Image (cartoon, one colour):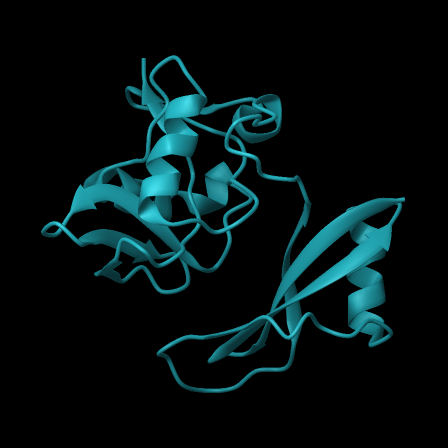
Length: 176
C-alpha cells in the first residue's frame, strides 16, 4: 500500500485534502469519492465565490521532506522543457516558507531554483502541459521588500505578495 494525498474542490471557495492508503492513485480517488474517507481538516479558502459539488483534482504520493536529505529524483523526475527552461516534473510535496523554498530548490543542485514572477506566470499558462500542479499558490523568487515575496494562484492565475513566513507550493526550474 502507498500513501496518497488527494486534494479536491468542495466548492469554488474551499479546497480540502485527504490522506489515503491505496495501491494506486485511481483507487485512492475512488475511496475519496465514495465518501468512505474523512478529510484531514486541512481546508483552504479561496477568494472566489460560487459553488460546485466536490470533485477530486489531484493525487500524488506523499514524500517526507527533510531539507538536508531530499530525494531529488522524486522532485526533478523527467523535466519539462519550455524555451530555455527546464521545469521539474513534480512540486515539492509540502507547502513551505519562501526561505525554505529557496533552500530546497538550491539543494536540488545544478542551477535549480524558484521561478521569478514572470516565469511562474508562464508555468501557470501552460500548467495543463506540465501536469501535476496543485490548485493552490506557488512562490516566485521575486521579492516585494524585505519581508514579502510574490506568489501566483494556480486556481485563478492571480498574483499577489505574502509575508515570506507564509507557506506556498514550489515548482523548481533551471535554465539550460
